[in-house]
Image 1: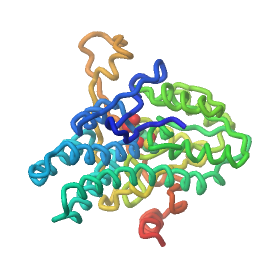
Image 2 (image 1 turned 30 degrees about the vertical axis):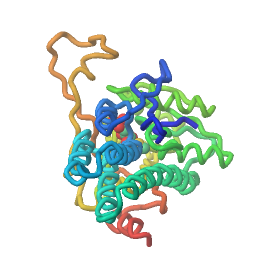
Image 3 (image 1 turned 120 degrees about the horizontal axis):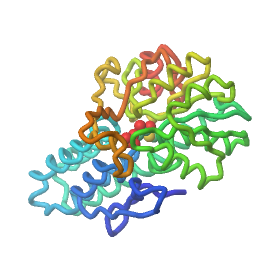
Length: 343
Ligand code: MRU
């Protein structure tokens, strides 16, 4: 299995997702500031992976700070990591978890504090893999045998500590003996589908066909696609779902063609403080990601370009939300709250 982010004695080691698939390179972050840079520049990306990296980043920050300065430095460590990317709520979820740990260690010996932070970061990592396997178990029965699944962006092992959410459901269906073929949207402008989803499915021998984003409607109409499965960066309590830009268009096209549209995400991606998706902050990235492809201009010099990195799919287009605790169906206000409470 691909190792997306790992805690090692040398630091936090990440596969460099900006280089895939042309080369498989690893980056070692020795400080929390380097972890923050890796999140910002998308060396590591995908909501759960960002959460795991942030937890490890906070642990690194605690290790690199002399005990007598930790009380002053701890808020800065958390703030630096929290200011990297605004949309994926798993980032803030992980940092809040580390803040609660810090509060619970009040008065503990420095060595105990350091050890507790490393253990907690490793726990976040291990839990994420277990959660993804559970999402896979719940989601696999929804995947039709002998048909194609369309996915957008990369919600796979590379977007998590391992196994993946949307791709975890596909992996679990394949492990259960189903014949599954995947259509991967290339996912302009950052090409997570072309570069990452195709790469990791190929590693596992799962058949995958790359399509450009504007082909999704054509294939959804063809009758070959049994369902759409995507990940999520933040889900409001009414089920409105923020995910990679272009997801909304896919959801509308799926509805138009009577193809079920599933969101696969851990409970940590729920933001029950938000009434609806209108309150989800949408990251705006550099215009160059749109005007250029791998540094080569594809538009006249000086072209104005918009680059929202995410869009919000209204809950009415979401057939079900697959979590590690079970499958939520509409109305989501009630079903998500029940799953979050563990009912
Ligand atoms: O900008 P990215 O690559 O971090 O966006 C990733 C996505 O939109 C994923 O679909 C989402 O984080 C779910 S990952 C399991």
